Length: 304
Image (cartoon, rainbow, N blue to C red; front, side):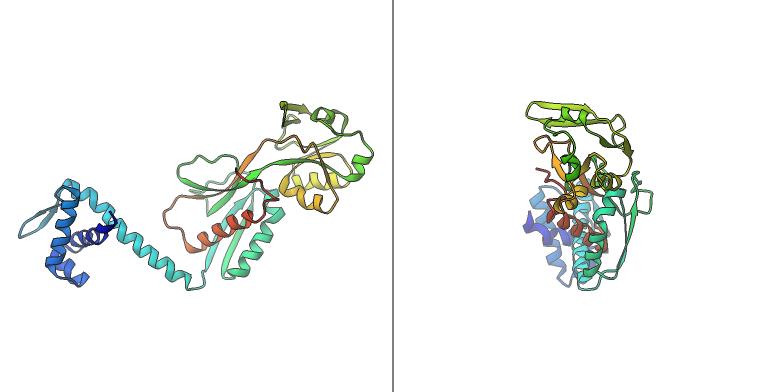
């Protein structure tokens, strides 16, 4: 129905300005042309949109329902022009984002530094918080979250999947028994994150199906960067999110084991409240974060 966009615009103008004459004046066309366009629209729809009289115009029930969509055309077009115009200017304002603590500590600083190099007038307010903030009532624009998001009032942009790697320092592996299968973990000093794994149980998926292992160790922490540091200092075997472990693995300070066994996956999403047209500053930051993770597949696994 793209060929009727002009007719829809004219119909909305007739109702907005109170008649054919007024609409024709605003649109700088003849009254006859406006009348013809509304008539063509009625013929295309196969129903009457207006009750016409010499004194006033009244919408039919169908006309009232259809008018809403015609009005949105104009609103969306205006918003589009405003968006293009704003792109020609330097965007300003504050973007507030809440992020899990360890996630933000590792690389949000890099993201923000690079983003503000492109948009120096946008202020980023970053909150590191493991609890979920209410995006509707709290003064927060967006959040990075792990797990499924099924709130119909929120938009969730997938960034990747969180996975974990079993790691220890090269010195630890040299002085302890080989780790070939998950059951071998019972012979190792395991550093457990008691915040996420309260029962000390590590789950793996291998060729023979899932395996659940209760690990033991002399150190239990609730912060992944601390667990990473402990593993680098030869204190035991750690199970670390890929985004925390990769830099240490690349530097040779950690080595992985049990690579044939996969950890449970958890989707990571950038979430913001559904609100129609986003402010330019928010849209720019959202697009930047999504593209940044797309170029760093070493940190989060693909959703596919």
